Length: 163
Image (cartoon, rainbow, N blue to C red; front, side, top):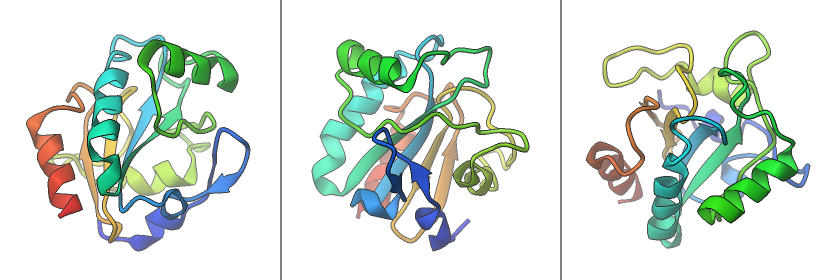
């Protein structure tokens, strides 16, 4: 998918402001649906490491809390932000909770889900911590939840998108 429009789809940040991926000032964004009470929650540590490693090169992780998978993100936005900060030292933007699947899915996720993964499968987000790498030109690469953020394939994709 090469569609610069995905970068201009509005969402609400943690302060209640309307933002887009373009507004974040990063050429490359790794969009991730996050959850605090999931077996994959330790991926926050690797996501934050990517943020610290590549932020100065025009990269940002963009977190979207989601409670659609077994209620693993039940808290308020304030409690989510406190958890992210105190447990994992998260510095990347964590935004308002969204739905990623179904009729009420956020428009950004409706667009992102059109991108197939490495096996050629598009559609529904499988679980928490599914990752979408959005380049400056709007092209998207999709990585499934169990693929860790520091996986060499994801790191190479970030490096390639930043070059």
